[in-house]
Image 1 (cartoon, rainbow, N blue to C red):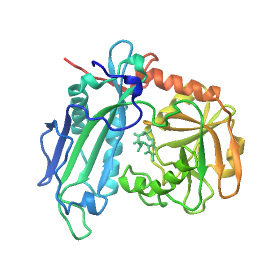
Image 2: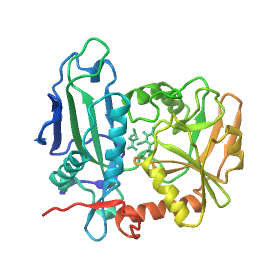
Image 3: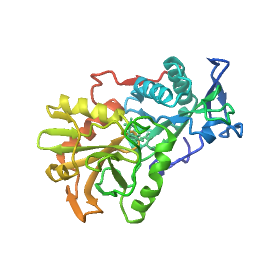
Amino acid sequence: MENINWSEFGFGYTKTDFNVRCTYKDGKWGELEVSESDQVNVHMACTGLHYGQQAFEGLKAFQGPDGNVRIFRLEENGKRLQNSCHGIMMAELPLDIFEKAILKAVQLNKKWIPPYESGASLYIRPVLFGSGAQVGVKPAAEYTFVVFVMPVGPYFKEGFKPTDYVIYRGYDRAAPQGTGCYKVGGNYAASLRSGELAHDKGYSAVLFLDSKEKKYIDECGPANFFGIEGNKYVTPKSESILPSITNKSLCQIAEDLGLTVERRPIAVDELANFNEAGACGTAAVISPIRKIVDADNNIEYTFGEEAGETSLKLYETLRGIQYGTVEDKHNWNTIVDFE
Ligand code: PLP
Ligand code: COI
């Protein structure tokens, strides 16, 4: 597109030309609708506003050097949205509607897809919420699904340069057996206060611990955690973290690269054993960690000023698959047809 400086995009909202919507009413999902407005008109008593009936997704489309545009793990994101809907009693969106809506939103906003050389990508944000009115605490009878897209750069402005994370035991993001494993807005609201405190002190994010024992690593506000110990990729197993699709992909890539993958509870003091550590997610990609400060105990776990070689290899392989320069052995990409 003319006069767009793609390299200036950080991770933030940009209005693009079209969004795609679908509503659930009388027990069924309707037809897809295309809108040019970025406003949604909702009932003041809708459950999305009052009772947190709301879930979202985040995925990306990448333009490769071959000119093809690939959406990474479309179906996995659709299934996770269904799981979130199930978790908070919202109408589940059929996978075919999810996929069609996303393809349409990307196709209609073709001019907003960053070119390969820019290093930016097109972030796709599907959101689904209770749009039906309800004053008693009950699930709504009506739901609205919207997909919008925007070009984005790195989530943490440092990109692949390692940054610092902090542990605060005074704040929890999600309860065991609560909603931490769903991608629902309330989890993010719960992470805001500690997140701002961390930012004010110069940290990229809070590394949350399990809220029951405060003994094990859970995840960051916007991303999962992994550590590298010799030839092992180690990542937390917890019922209160979001099952990250990036992390799942990295586990497979690690295995393909000959690493051993361990998904298990990771005690805080095990951080001392890791040679490398990182945060991973769609927005964060891999954001290497320089140090983790346990602020309650004045302990620092350090991992180096530069990203380690295993993190770099994982990053390059993941990016390569997403941009089409490394073979997509596991069929993770959906190529968008612009005909
Ligand atoms: N954890 C949380 C809390 C997130 O919000 C995200 C982002 O979606 C992730 C992890 C990473 O998940 P994914 O890799 O599927 O984007
Ligand atoms: C993502 O990685 O897609 C996220 O949703 C993380 C954050 C922006 C909420």
